[in-house]
Image 1: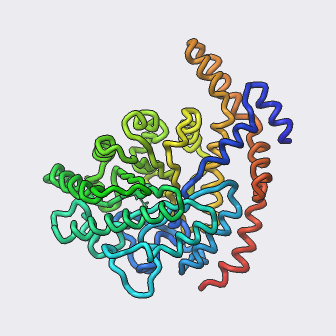
Image 2 (image 1 turned 180 degrees about the vertical axis):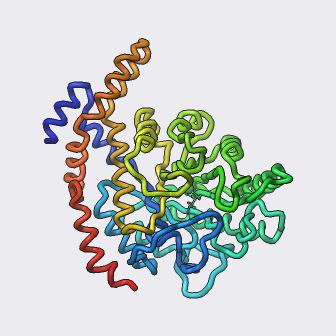
Image 3 (image 1 turned 135 degrees about the vertical axis):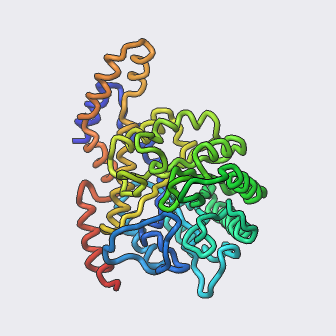
Length: 410
Ligand code: RNT
Ligand code: ZN
């Protein structure tokens, strides 16, 4: 089937071997927080808050770092290619309570060593939620000096750790700052919170971190911050452009008809690099598991068609506790890779030549014909070559892991 597919793609000048070679070099940053419903190990049963919500109670959630790593290893065995782990600060390992403004690299050494053993890059995130000092709804933008100081120090500590992670792994860490700050109802002052956020970020980012890349993530609204979010898209686009840092675009953080696929080419003219939080909102920023949707394909297509995979870090951001969590990872990451492959198998040169000639008929005709080209045969070949299950066979592996491991967890 693969040989036939290769010939069919070749009729349009598409080289499937070159596409698979490029696909194998694009890492996806796999978010640890799908594995335990954004619980972390600081206070796993505490309230998430800050507008983050996970629904479902599928049995078998990871309760310890070892369980989470075991689940990730199972997921990774179902996913072709070399990827990255995306870790939040609340996933620290410690026997005694450590406050978030006092975390150190040693609290993450277990993760660093594990990433090394698994040949994974590592990305990091300050956790500015699920904490009493985030209960007011304001962190880096808080008018309370003590609260603001605590979160500044937390973010600074995270950058030091991230820089160590990057140095130890010989591969830069991307550290993404997302804060929940906002108001439920109409603000009397929209400017001052943004001035405070800007000043806080300036302090957080003041010291150089050669093995770390800083990213900032905007949001439109959250539960409890429906009327106003301090870190809006305009705020962070301006900030990232001014500081020449990484801008994070989360697919669920815009108006429902506003697509991040459309923003990539514009933002890359002004910021050096992008981080994507590939997610799927259903009616709101619901963080559903990523499916092979039109928008996913549009996002991945923009990356590869413009050959900007070196400037766009692909991260995932969904959390579904209503299905098997290992399966959720497998579905979301495999879809993201299939989206990339569909983009890589596009006859982009032909489409662009037709476009430049004003031949929009050919452009539309080819775009539509590609939809029934045999992507599945090329994808199956990739899975086979990378020694991961072909087709739905991966589900059998998840089922047996559920029987032997997950079902034993109370
Ligand atoms: C929240 C942001 C943020 C979080 C994770 C846990 O709206 O999308 O990225 O989902 O950091
Ligand atoms: Zn996000």
